[in-house]
Image (cartoon, rainbow, N blue to C red; front, side, top):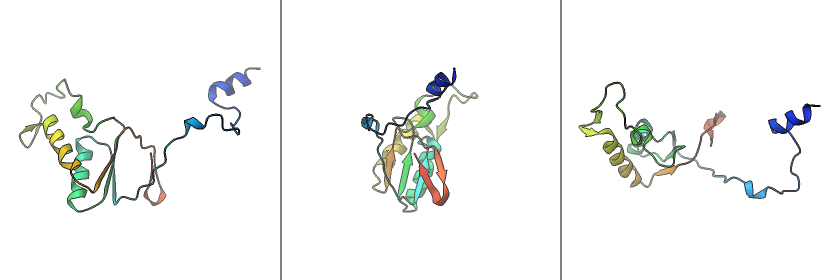
Length: 127
């Protein structure tokens, strides 16, 4: 008796063979970079910069609408690090400077609003 409702709530049901939900299709992109960096925060940006400095083709993927990670949202000090800086520049300014520097590199492709959900055999990244 409850099985029908449980299947409905769980998402189990009939397959739409008529294609009524065609508008729900997702974009497919196939990329073949030398290096794929997941995460556009300070560490991910530094990793991308390191690979770009070596002349590699880099794909940088972040699930947020813009790069920068926690440096964009740090309004409260963390662990008494009120004056957190990179090379004498406040962290958020240093990250923005790095983003501008990386954006000028033609070997970098950035995908924002993209969640990585799997790493498979042969270095296949599913996002």
